[in-house]
Image (tube, rainbow, N blue to C red; front, top):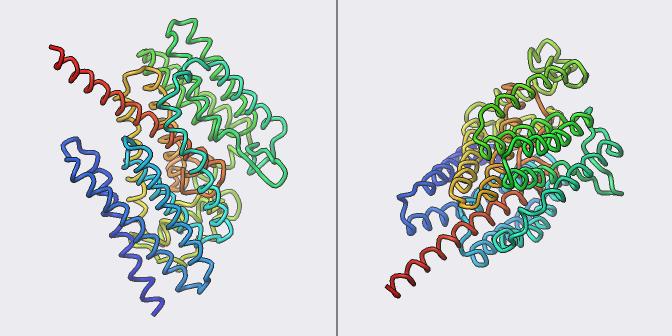
Amino acid sequence: MVHLFVSISRFTLIIMFAIYTYDCFAALKRKTSEKRQNRIYHRQNGILYLMLLNANAVLFAVTMDFRILVLLGAEMVFFAVTLAIYRHFYRNASRSLVNNMCMLLAIGFIILTRLNFEQAVRQFIIAAAAVVITCFIPVLVAKLKVFNKLAWLYALVGLAGLAVVAVAGSTDYGAKLNLNLGPVSIQPSEFIKIIFVFFCSAMLVKSTEFAHVVKTTIIAALHVLILVISRDLGGALIFLITYLAILYVATRQPGYLVLGLGSGAVASVAAYFLFSHVRTRVIAWENPLSVIDNEGYQISQSLFAIGTGGWFGSGLYQGMPQKIPVVTKDFVFAAISEEMGGFFALCLIFVCISCLLMFFNIAMQMKDLFYKLVALGLATLYGTQVFLTLGGVTKFIPSTGVTLPLVSYGGSSLLASMILFAIIQGLYVLHVNEGELYEDNKKKQKRFN
C-alpha cells in the first residue's frame, strides 16, 4: 500500500508543480487582468500547501517518523505567515516573487527532510529567522535614499570580509570559504556578493569616465583576487560576471565586456595550472567514468542518479541519492532529479528562470540608474549562481562548488538568497510607488487645468 502511494505521488507532485510553473509565466503576461492574476496567485498558494502535504505524507508513510508531521505543521505556519507579511504589509510587493521564493524553499525543505532530517530542521530554523530579518528590507530599500552614497563603505566591508576569510577561514573541499565563530560557521562571501553589487552600482552611477572606471575595476579586481587566493573560484567567477554586466550597462562600451571576458578566460587557464583541486574538477568533468574511483566519483554518481530517475522519478525514498557526496549542498539538484523526476527538475529550472525574468524586468523598469544597476547586478548574480550549480551537476561545465539558491542546505546561502529577494521586492515596491505618485500628480494637474 505504501509503495502504491509513493508511486502515485510521483505523478501528483509533477502535475501540481507543472501547473504552478505554467502559472509563473502566465502571471508575467502584461495583458493578464488583475482579477486573473489574483486567481493565479491564490492557485499557486494552494499548490504550495498541497505539495507540502503530499510530499510529507509520503515521507511519513515510508518512515513512520512523527517528527516529520511536527516539522510539516511548522512549515505550513511559516509559509502562511510569510505570505501574509507580504500580502498585508507590502501592498505593492510582487506576489509572484513571494510565491516563487516560498516554492523554492518548500522544495528545499522536502528534499532535505528526505536526505537528512536534522539538516532540514536547521534549514527551517534559519529560514524562519531570515524572514524576521528580511521583512524590514523592502521598506528600507523603498524609503532610504543613501544607498548610492556609500560606495567606499561597501568596498571596505567587502574587501575586509574576504581578507579575513583568506587569512583565518577554514578550508572546505580545497577552498577557504567559512569562518568558524564558536559553534556557528558562516560564509561571508555569500553576503559580500550583495554588498559588491551595491559597490559597483554606486561607483559607476557617479561617473563612467575612463579614469573612474579604472579605479572601480581595480577595487572590483581586488575582490576577485582575494577569492582566487582563498581558492573560491566559483565565487570569483560570480563576482567577475556580475561586475562585467553592471559595467557594460553603465558604460555601454562593449570593449570593456570583451576585455573582461578575455581576462577571465586567461585567469581560468592560469587557475588550472596553479590549483590542484581545479585540475581535479576538470579531469572529473572531461571523463568522470575514467576516474570514477577518485576524482570522478561525485559527478558520476550525480549522472547515475539523474539517469536512474528518468522523467518521472523513482519516488521519495526509492532512490539512492545518499551515494552522492555533498548531496544536500552542491548536488541537491541530482537528488531532486532522481527521486522526483526529470519533469519535476525541469519545472524547477523554469521557476528559477521566471525569477530571473522578473529580476531583469524590474531592472528595466527602474527609472533611477543606481537602482537599475543594483537590480541588474542582483539578477546577474542569481542567474550565474543557478547556471553554475545546474551546469556542474549535469556535467555541462566543471563543478564549481556553488549552491542552488533557496534549495540547497546552508545557512549563509539561504539568508543571503532571502536578502537578495527582499532587496528586489524593495525595488519593485519603489517602482510601483513611483508610478502611483506619478498618476496622482497627473490627476492633480488635470484638476487645476
